[in-house]
Image 1 (spheres, helix red, strand yellow):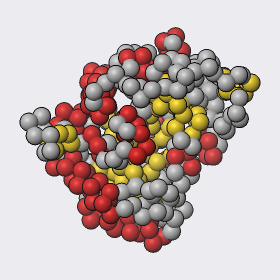
Image 2: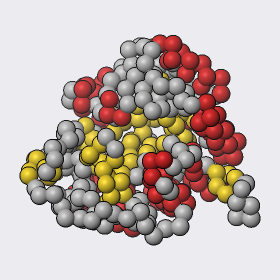
Image 3: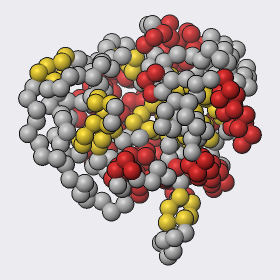
Image 4: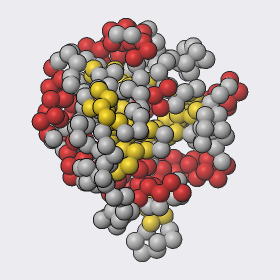
Length: 366
């Protein structure tokens, strides 16, 4: 497995050629599997349903420890590298060991990260444009304020809206609390274009941004392929004054080159901004470089069933050493390739994967 990881690091660090990785292609049909970009027929695997027995006592703590280990690793290689935790609400506090009914700040976790990106604080659950339930919104805001109070963490909110009234409401509510906001009209891979409203970044600034504390706005682009070639994408973004840009490491099957990343780092004004790479810790995605042709649910044993609505992403036992070695901890890892490619930091998604192991989809979301 690690030979494939080494191949990606070489591609990310020194090459502009396309690696032998999987494309972000449409879902395959029943009885099919995607291998190296081809759809091939296969018989259904004779795998018994995976039990919910997971072999760990505290899935939340396992995720906290995973993030803390990633933090220690990146600090050894780049002390300025930024780690943003996406959807970490259930990790920010934990039960007091002497009083399990009392919740205390998880200081080791909040000190391991540099910021928070929280989805759907006001809009977007369960669908784009749906108003978040008051109880969930209030709990989310309480946890975010805890993170700011305990670790002075900058907060970014990514809400999913359907109209200008919702967009304006998010900007107003977030600004009132000192949060950065990006009200988006798409979700996941549909985050593939710059917003038409507002056409320029909210609270636009021509000044340089060297840390999240300096930033006033951000944009998330999970799929840059609609912009055309990498140089066209980089130049388009260079023509904007966003303070923070979050992008996928790959455009289709090809990683963004160091030159593209370097171009992304500069605003239209010529000032510096932050470029963060998206990375999922809670799911193995079959279009990523590390996915092997013979992988499927239950093989390796730490790969579980696909995520609902996304057959190309499988749940993983994220505490498994093999998965963690793919992500971090060595110079063959995904995160090291991100560092080597010149990104300012990474957004760590999938942190809420512990819900599944605590009781499935009906588990308490916080």
